[in-house]
Image (cartoon, rainbow, N blue to C red; front, side):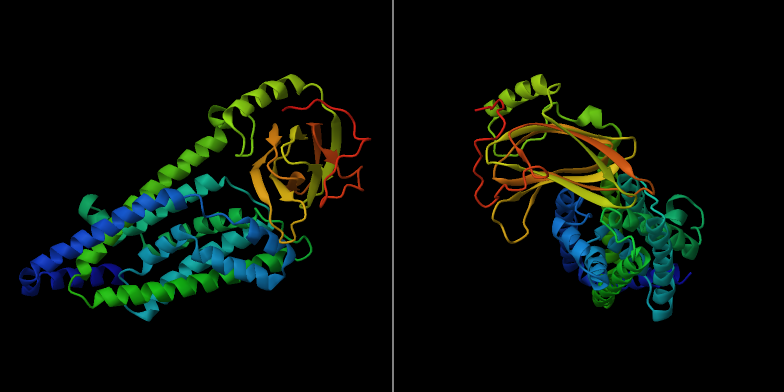
Length: 414
């Protein structure tokens, strides 16, 4: 195979007498690459869960057209470090355009098929498990680059083309889970998906050009073998670390009751003494809901429900579906703000959620739900505390949140 033939030639080159004469520089290079690798590994915890899309991207894709989907696909790929690490491993020892095009095309076909098929048919898999497998694919490609199957297992490696195509299918599921976290257009669903996929390929090509330049620069050096060895070992370590972190995230979602703190979600500007008082009061009020609202989220549709809350107010909430999971984003929007800024307090894909919110700003607070199933989903939402319903109090002026005298009486927490 070209990949390993090239590697053998490079190994022979490293044995030249020039390396002995430049051993101090050789050692310094090794130390430099090792330090860079350790530094990047230390940064990984900050990036391990950054693969999702930001709130700004979500808003843009809701309001934008297909060009916006394309742009988001490109930027998403450029920030998808696990996908890029896999592509980097694929091209590491490829030296001619034909081989590069062949293997990269196989990966592209693989992830495009599952991205389009899974998203169009609303097939959802646990994204932590998918990302865990993607992390292992990075380990696999680096292990292959190191000729690990022959060195350590004494067997020939699997057919590289088949493996890259197969792993590309898995990467496509990972891209699909991220895309399905967005409210997609029901009327132009397929066109939206294709536009996003085209953006993915644009981002991949852009990153590929940069990778080839970096590798070509190091390939001219007689230290390339050292660079390649250290880099591929680093990819194995990074992929292993990502795998462990994704499995840890999966444990949080699969066994949420074991990891959830008993204190309901609170905004971060509340001191510990106040949190204790809020918790005990909230528990005593759970059976005394002030409002019960019934909502229906249409098939593959979305809906919001908001209440107006003053700064420092407290309200309890609980909502449950009739069985199906919904993606939700519990957030607040400051009064008088014209920039579109908002703060998310909690988001997940579940069948129910409950807690207490202590507001740090005046404005609308509430939920956005997205239904990815092919059937309508009913929600029962219960509320109590200091708030004004926007659906029955349409005259609330958010820029000047003054509570009217006719406001129903309620208990308050100082």
